[in-house]
Length: 121
Image (cartoon, rainbow, N blue to C red; front, side, top):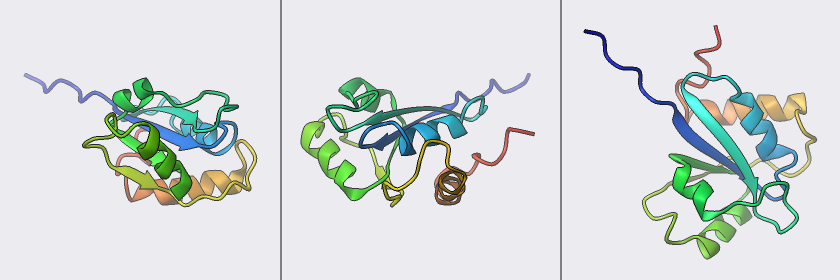
């Protein structure tokens, strides 16, 4: 008998406006067999604003800056219990799908997501 496939890990990317950094990170995982990705922003004008539902869905939460961690902990303390937030330390100076941003995301995510670079063969 074969082992049933492992369900994809659910990862959430957070930035301020959910227009450039977190949305680019989400796109890197389109079609990945090991991960499902979503993204959201912390600011009122964000393309998609983070909710308790996003945090409940996520197995892992990645933020782009420390201020995003602070906002999440202030607004969603209960939903974050038992969840580790990983700060990628990526400044707000890139456009959507910027190649430098993509390279930086790949580099910083590799240590946290061992199956990130596999599965696209």
